[in-house]
Image 1: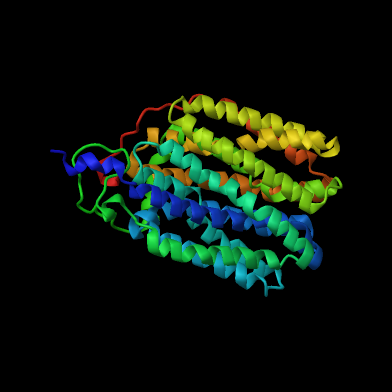
Image 2: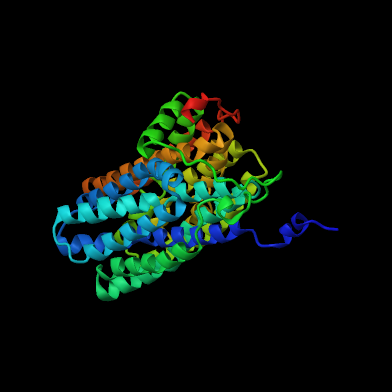
Amino acid sequence: MKSTADHEPKKVHYAWIVAGVTFLTLLAAAGARAMAGVILLPFGNEFQWSRAKVSSIISINIFLYGLVGPFAAALYQRFGLRRTMLAAMTLLCLGYAASTAATHYWQFVLLWGVVVGVGSGLAATVLGAAVANRWFTQRRGLVMGVLTASTATGQLIFLPALATVVTAHGWRSAPLIVAGATALVFPVIWIFMRDDPRDVGRRPFGETGAPELAAVATPAGNPARRALAVLAEAMRVRDFWLLAGSFFVCGASTNGLIGTHLLAAAFDCGIPPVRAAGLLAMMGLFDLVGTTVSGWLSDRYNCRYLLFGYYGLRGLSLLFLPEALIGPAAGLGIFAVFYGLDWIATVPPTVRLTGDVFSRERASIVFGWIVAAHQLGAAFAAYAAGALRTNFGHYAPAFMGAGALCLIAAIAVLPITRKKQEFPKAAA
């Protein structure tokens, strides 16, 4: 006679439903982050602000998006994934909706910089890592790749539509669309999201052994204090600095630079905004493929060598970009393919290496700090590229500098080890 356990593999594991809800949440949040590049020019033109001044608002948003990450990981553990995700969607919706009535610089700093920045940080790559680590033992790299690819899918969906609407109706239409998208995701999270496999009487997908259906003890104490304590432990590990340093370069060369300034750089070269947004969407399509495949590869191959290849390819692509912008249209197409395949393909192997080096209960928070480094690099690049454009009249120094940093990062990731770090149990 067959036991109930024999039939369990035939059922759809609830982990896949949780992954689907998380994908939709990250998709909506990706639309919120994609808006910056679309409105940079019309927003600055209306208020007669320089690109450096507009970029400063975006850089605050990006910085807080990253800084909140490790604290968000602690909040997931303390208050649960579901409640934290609902809080994130509420902040994004309110921040963008209210910004349509703003008229002063400080108001945009508060709404776009602080409110939206914090909301984005609560629904960021760290969320995908937390879900993958908590709900999956097998297929973790693939799941992380798909969840990370939601950013690319968000670009595919939002960028061309936002660019068209902004061109026809002005920049205020974009935050209203994004606010509506985040509001639509709210009931999906409320109904279907669960915090832990034990909430539905299951173990993480692919985990073997006898069921352990007792609830896991919620970490006690202040989540912020826990996040800082884990950071103090991680800072004693060389591999943390290598991972965080390479991810700083990742942020500086992706959403901080290309995601924020490529549309403006294309406009400087005579390329219409809607066509440039289509270029970004095309990059998003290739990134959707590249990041998903990267997740599959990170389950099977040495992640250090994957990162070496990703950063090296990205660096060469960025060094080629200034020529592509002023050359034939085919040059931009080539850039979109190679850069798109590599845009955020670095995330799955970085998550995997973080899990290899740090224990499961710490990995999400440590990765949160690594993402904070990513967004610090993005904030730096978002402002620095705007300042360089204001001073030099073009973006070539920013693109060339980012390309050089990527080549350095390609070398820096090779010494990362896979040895698990041991810490005192009291600090867990």
